[in-house]
Amino acid sequence: MAKLLAALLLMMVAIGPACAVAPTSRADTVAALDRYRSDFAKIRGYGSLSTADRNYVLFSDAMRRVLTEHVKPFDPQVLIDKAEDGLKKKKAENPRASDRMLTEAALDGMLGSLDPYSSFLDSERYRYLREQTQGEFGGLGIEVTMDEDSGLIKVVSPIDGSPAARAGLRSGDLIARIDDMAVKGLNLHDAVARMRGPVGSSVALSIRRPPATDANTRVSLTRAIVKIQPVRYRLEGNVAYVRIATFNQSTSTALDAAVEDMRRQSRGRLIGAVIDLRNNPGGLLEQAVQVADRFLETVDIVSVRGRDPEESRSYRGTSGDLLAGLPVVVLINSGSASASEIVAGALQDHHRALLFGSRSYGKGSVQTISSLSSDTGIRLTTARYYRPSGALVDCFGVSPNLEVKPTHGSTEESHPDPATCDANAPVPPKPQVWMVADMCPDVMDKAPKPDDDRPLECAVSAIRNRLTGTLAGGE
Image (cartoon, rainbow, N blue to C red; front, top):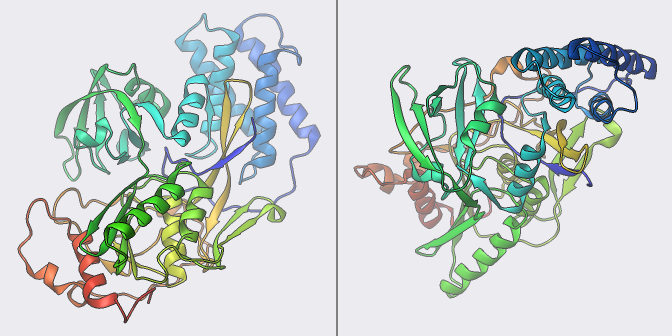
């Protein structure tokens, strides 16, 4: 299968700096793989492992790709160390493990050590990721990562309309137990596997909601086919509201249809648009570029820089503006990540939109998904995103022009650990900042109600009262 360049967000911790280095020598690679074959046989407990063995071919193919394609360089002997950790753990857990089980454990150990995004994709995970990009899959509809501080699973974002969203799960929630199994001590793959299951079956999650440290709430969810509707929309008077939940294969065309329908409903009297990217965990790079291009002309949108400078790529817009220069406000929060940060950063850098809300997550790396066999694959972090301004998205995220918090729900923000950031990365330029009292005083002066969406109300008010004719199209 051809490689799919995607920014699929399942884990959210930033990686270290990318740099160009000489490739690992062939002799070093061969020596490391020879050691793996010898040690595999010892750990297995019998025989030898031939270079023609299909399990060895699977492992060696994956390791060679890591050495040549990953955004960071690695010592092949260190990769073997991590692979053998996985081998030994699997053998201890299951003394009768097959060669295939041992090989997959070695791949898990090696790839899982590279960064929080890279991983081996067994048949189930490989199918799951392919289904996600196509817009429909079975499960709870929840993006998660490992919370290093607590050892628990952290909710990045529930997908709109999913069982997780209907159950009230929020970004930042910590999952402490899955049914009767404590999460602490499980790795991310095992925890996610326990949350999956047949459509129609149930699972109970014990949720810890920060800032509480030990009080758990038990929530029962029924697994379902999650149909990802990438775009939802409605009119707020004469202002178009577009909620983009994810960037899958149909996002840009769905956006076109939404704007056209609202233009028809308003009889051509739209005065602006609010693009809601809150809790949007990302998706396909090409779709992020196409969505940003809907509002931009022939300007830079994002650059993707990998380990080899010669393989860096820049993406530019094409002529034409879907909204013909009408003012745009983009809503972001700490659950906005990856592809959504590409859109927000590009529109802000080119002064095409104002950003309302809170700082986005700060996940700006590219995962390339490629096949190892007909039903397995690997996901490797191969590059990082840079905004048109030249600023790195990783760790920094995108800061709003106007900070406005919701009146209800979790206000806890989640961002990568600064220690994992690139100390030499260019700092994003500070955006022009407005005060809430200047942009939407009518919204902020009224007493909040439980179901108010203050960021959205502020955005609509700003377009109606402040942006039209004065700040149309940007800053």
